[in-house]
Image (tube, rainbow, N blue to C red; front, side, top):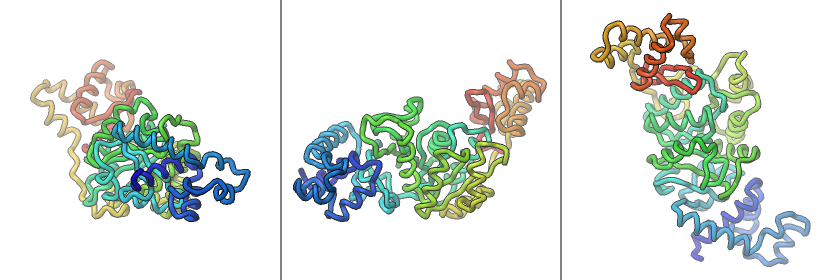
Length: 389
């Protein structure tokens, strides 16, 4: 086996054995000099190094290396990429973490050299139960980063809510994005995000990554291990919404422990989804996000050039005046302005606020969504999109 492949295969084997205790791998390498040396020592040396009662003793052998080589050959043959912690393309900022994974699996249409170590990583994390307020500001924050002089890569965990909102807005804003999976590289969790995962893997500078071997299932502990990679790869972490206990809070605290900048979106004190953010701000663990124009500078992305937003009413009249009569056009404008005024308003509430019947509201909202002026979620809650004011 040639040296570069041996180094990667050895890292894969160590990652499989000590994946939940990566510091153990680092200590072994510090002691023996390299990942491959761990598998080349004699049985007696291994016994002296680990002691007779360790649960790992029987797993450190040639069979583990052979299994890792088969996995490496199969995955690289299928188009996946494998990086060991010693590869120059391995994310440098992650390598600095004391618990950095020994190996990363990468899914992308581009080589790792085009993905990592070019742009500062900004983690956007938070609750799966995202509110209309959280979704709107998640989009606005990512869009603001996309307008900064220095373009970041948006990093998150592919979960429902905040994560997928950040990934998709990054692509819409022309930014690369990296999805860190809690499962093997040959899988996607949750499965409903398979289409988004494919889009990410095919986008310039973007990728799906994990340190889990193929076949890993999404158990609860997997998410914590995944979160350390999100925090470790990012120069700054922004918590959008989170309860006091949640994966986003874990990621934010991990980022703080790595000495990285942490920001949080303030929220209502009686909203459970904002209690985690408010607590981090109160503890001074996180800086509050209070000025969108100032945020890119705080993130080290340069001075923000605020792009002029289009007026909602003017945009609606400009797009529909030639194809709708005056009365229908005004119903459309009324609907748009009501949505702008009340973030997350439902179809039923729009009927009450505007005095229009349900069929009119449904038709108007559908037209506005088709032109990209509003977004409608599965509960028929409506929000104005980020490029309109």
